Image (cartoon, rainbow, N blue to C red; front, top):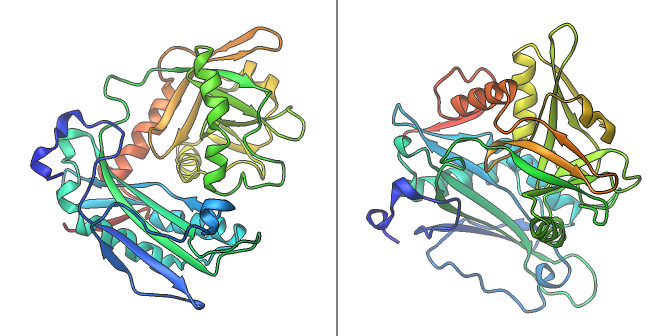
Length: 345
């Protein structure tokens, strides 16, 4: 699809083809040269471990065309480190931060005509994927790994304002095992969540709230995103509270929000969060690359019929955190922590 064929003012958060994707293979103990491809398909052996044994992980990050004409990529070094963690745990070859960032910069540059203009509110979504591409019949790691990256222009997640979603507590499914792959961005984590998500939708809810897989006592994640609650104490100080455990993915968005919350003078608490603490939150939300923050309006507990309510729109502290993070991504406020990589494209 050529740039002039895209309806830039009505982009959705979905896949739009772009001209160039990048690939790099690890073979015989070393990473090869970065390859540029135009085809959207990947040819691999039918016995590739990605197909049989789930040796696959991915990342998601964004590049923004900003008001000053420059392009900013947000915290790609953190995505590189998280992919390293995923690849290592899944016994794939681990790409260096330098290789990962070189590929991100190059795939954005080679598809620069597909970065939405600042005025559209859109961005260029970058999807790195790493897979075991070599054949094995037994359950063992592949001797070949493929790291590939493609991009797609996407529209603003909120085109009609930030509205709170509804969630239902799910005690019949777990997002990940207590000491499993929850801390990685393994593809299998997301495949395993589809049944829960669809069952939640069928019951009339936008998302599901997972509990810790060991005891179902603590809050885990909300759908495919990290969860947070905001509580204002009797002294008027706001607390940013987010669950922490081995089964929760270390969200880069959440990491950024925790830093911004601390910058704002909020008390940041990353810890086990008891389910009953929902009663104490003034605001609730989930956070991730796609939307930054999604406010949670209600959480329903089918076990006792309780509905926890946090307001229909976005709360004042959530809005303040959202506005600051988005402003950093777009170069509209000082990037005091050096999160952006700035490109003249």
